[in-house]
Length: 154
Image 1 (tube, rainbow, N blue to C red):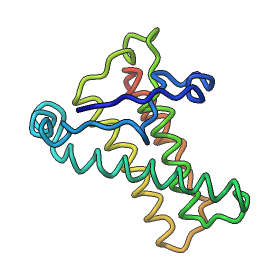
Image 2 (image 1 turned 45 degrees about the vertical axis):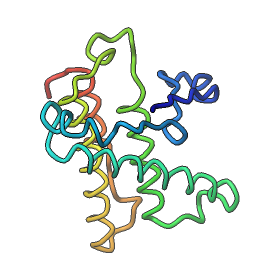
Image 3 (image 1 turned 90 degrees about the horizontal axis):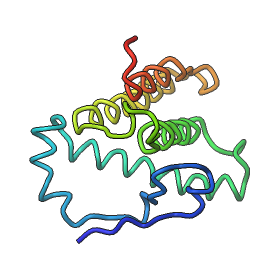
Image 4 (image 1 turned 180 degrees about the vertical axis):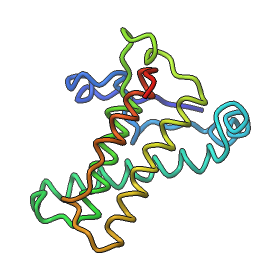
């Protein structure tokens, strides 16, 4: 009922665990959603769905950027790619040598996922004000997300 598809390209990029989120799946996600709602946070299934959609959208945009070049992408596309990169690098990648990151509780994972989506929403609000993506600075939020992952008080 579940498959973790390992990706050698992720392993070569030192992304551990090297689980390909696009081809991996679980038929139990809906069955365990209520447990994760209780132990992780409200809206777990919605949050998971939004992150998976974001990662899928980024994969499609990477393919397009490979054909036409990243400069041809619109500001919203850059926001999607940057936010998804943050999700991959901070939320999905783990450091087994860091005790705070080797294991992540459901509530910590929920908080990190919510923080990543908050960055996306802040970027969308920035773009809705007709401000260029180049003026959007996600670094403070990224640092806060890393601090949350590593158990550092800010």
